[in-house]
Length: 365
Image (cartoon, rainbow, N blue to C red; front, side):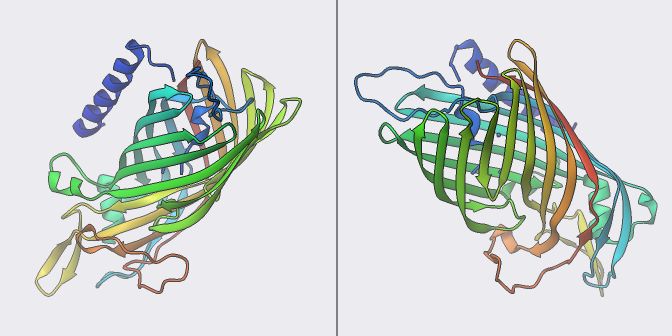
C-alpha cells in the first residue's frame, strides 16, 4: 500500500476512534440507506417522527475491511491515435476495500452521517512484457485507486414521511502521491429521496440521483423499497437501479442474500501515465478517463462472529457494463446520458469472470 493510502487509512482510523471513544451511538457511489436500521430512537418531546429503521434489515456497518477478487478474463483495448487494438489476458483483478461510516448527529429529528472509503483495483496481466497499447501499459504499471468521502442526511418530516440526501466526492484514477497535481480531479455524486414508512416492516421512497455508477455522469430516477415479512424470515433491500437483494433470515445472527449491484465510477489517467505517438515522438495525455462500470449478480452470507464483529462472504458473476475511455479536458465532465452521441476516445471490451469478496465488519449495536 502506498504512503498516500496508508496516510488516508490512518486519518480514517483516527476519525473512527475519536467518535467511538466519545461514545457517539450509531455502504459506493444514492448509496446504502439501510445504514440507519439500528440507530436508537431518542425521545425529544411530544412530537413524533418517522423512525429511520424498520425491523429485520441487515446490520449497519461502522467499519469495514475487505478483499475483492475477480478471476481471469480478456481485456481488449480499442484504437487510439497510431495504436491498433490489443487483447490481453488478465489473470485476476483484486484489491483491498476499506470503509468507515460514522453518524455525527443521531436523534429522532435528524441523523447526519460522515464516511469515507479506500478501494484498490490491481490488474495482474498474464504477459505484461508483451503489452504495447498505452492504456494496458498504464493499468499494468499503476492500477486504479478510489479515495472517497460522503455524507448522508436523514430528515423525518412527520410520523411517516422522511427525506434522505446523499452527497459524495470520489478521487479515482491511477494517481500517486509523488504527483499531487493529479489529485485535483474528482467526481461528485448526489441523491435525494422522498420516502414513507407506513409500518415497522416497510419503507419506500422515490427520488433522483446524479451518479457515476454506470461509469459516466448520468441523472436517473431511483426507487427505495425495504420490506420484512410478518414472520421476519423474508425481506427485500432495494435501491433501484443501483442494487437489489432478497433476504432470508436464518436468525438475527445469520442471514442469506441474493441479488445484484451496479458498481462503477470514472477513473482518470494521471498526467504522463499514458503517452500517445505523434510526429515528435510520444506526448503525455492527461485528459482521459476510464468509464468503469460492472453489474455483479451475487449470493451473500452475513454472520456474526463475536460481539459486534460480523463476517460477510460474497460470490457471483461480474458482467462488464462499460470500460470505455472518454476525453475530459481539464476535468470538465459532460453529460452523455443514454442517448448522447459524443464520440469515445477508446472503445474497449471485457469478458466476464466469477468473483468473490470477503469482509470483516464492525456493526452498530
